[in-house]
Length: 189
Ligand code: GRF
Image 1: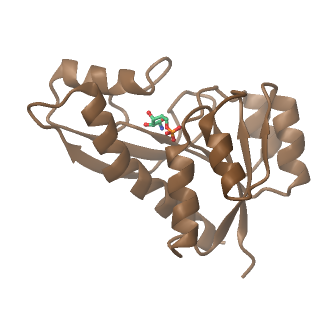
Image 2 (image 1 turned 180 degrees about the vertical axis):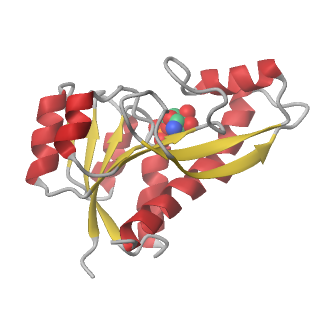
């Protein structure tokens, strides 16, 4: 079966992108391949990760350019991995295929407009939840609002700081969930 062609959109360090690249190398992702990495931030370290892995990569801060290149590459699935821009309804409609996102909490907790990155973990600790985690979901025009695909729980420790919690949620949940979700969606055909 032909592998699904994946474009990964990033804005920062790209640790989730790296987890996807590593999962492909380890054979955890067998039904898909990352053909394209696009960042909306020019100096995102994730672009260097793409470079190092020989993956075609671009910096665009304009959705139309992103869409042009995505269509030229016949991309099947778009993966938002630490991508901090809200995609427009037009973009989502025009692409027409599945777009998935990783969010560092158990949606519907600690999500929505403006709640991303380290702020998610600050909110979780402030609220005093005992369990948090990560969610992979389909993207629609509502920030973190699409159908949930998978979730993984992470227990909070008494001495957690937002930084230690973010690191554990990334290591134990995000970097496991996202590659697995890509494989599960891709092998469905
Ligand atoms: C992290 O906070 C992660 O939880 C969220 O985006 C941020 C950056 O991720 N998904 P990455 O290292 O750029 O993948």
